[in-house]
Amino acid sequence: MKTYLLPSAKLTLILIVLLAGIYPLVIAGIGKFTPGKGDGETITYKGRVVGYANIGQKFTKDEYFWSRPSAVDYNAAGSGGSNKGPSNPDYLKQVEVRIDTFLKHNPGVNRAQIPAELVTASGSGLDPNLSPGGARIQAARIARVRDVNVNVVLKLVDQHVQAPLLGLFGPAKVNVLQLNVALDEMKNK
Image 1: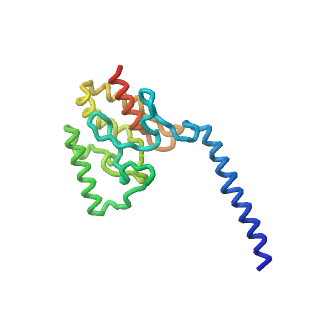
Image 2: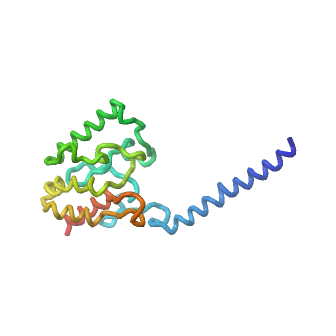
Image 3: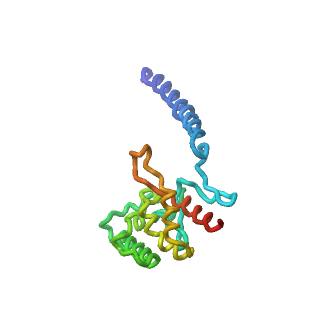
């Protein structure tokens, strides 16, 4: 037993130093070279922080682009999905309510045109992005409420489309918070 005890204690001590000391310091150092310097990339409007670029937020007013639904009500401390599958009756009722709400607020859009991302929650419950199509389908509502030409809103969406990483990895996306801040900035010009 003594032959295993000393090597186990040494290995435990080495791993504690590596994994609880050195590794977190290296990751924190790398984080200092990212946007937000490792503290999260904030978005400001009129000199004050309005949110984080990588954490979804709830928007329900018709004058704003709506975010993807959240199973955790956009609570960043409790990130997670609903764990309900597409055959779960409660989940299907929830999706139906979201579809009906979307159609009520977006006249002229039919059920088949609604992107799934606008009525289903993401796995994290905090997805900050929509597809360009998910943003464009809301443009008519926003243009009507803000009393601007729909082409102005569509142009704004196109200006905020982020291409896939290196043009290869992942889909094109639009950050909802950045897009909504741009809408408000447009109003103040």
